[in-house]
Image (tube, rainbow, N blue to C red; front, side):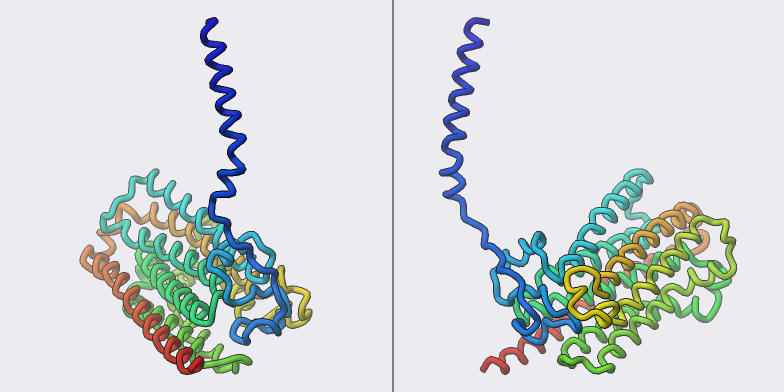
Length: 353
């Protein structure tokens, strides 16, 4: 015991000496760049300006690390980033807990659910990256939003697979819509990605109404088709079913999100007052995240109800073929975005020559 105490004091004195050297060690580490303060709309190129948003823009051309650190800076994209960034771990933890509890593997009945989970995480992650980093340069702005549109198309088809195999009724599947549903959903998912990419490249601010047409028509048609098996259940099903309540909420949240995506409210009524908090795209993000969370819970319940009868209701070959089309759609969307990105690079090169 007598020898233990001196050893303890000796160790403590060495630790104090190491702490004394800590400031020197910190000074030796490379310092992170500090993001510059935000600027007004007139101080950034027109590409980065949003209608009726007058301030809170991050300057263009900073170090990439500045935009990453802007996660903790006050600017007009901050809530657009955090709404989807925070949803990612919520979805990831919920999916991880469900997969672990149910012992899901890559067996045929669970494949559509796993692809849906992947598609949800993809669109949330791509959206987060786009809004966080897009102010770096014109090329970064275009490239990252093309990536965002890939996420939109992937998510649409992920939803279609899950709705068809877990959320549809036999009467709906035997209808004309049900017969054409999966190929139609794949085509419209690609058109949504392509239409948004084309509108982004083709039109400059101030944007004409035609730009919204290219964005909203394929996306709107895709949603009408993708949600049709759920809409059928809401019409013919029993509202005492808690799963239908969650599906009804996902529809309500999506339609509310679509309104705010289409209309710049409330910033149109109060220009400059909603720059940091409260503009339409932030509200759109919030309702879209709520839609995804309600949809996830409803589909998990649908999966548990359908899991053991899946291969009796759907032929295994049909199910595997539908799931195999998912990576094909991802590839088509990625190629489309890549082609648009190459076109933008050429335009920017000619612009600066």
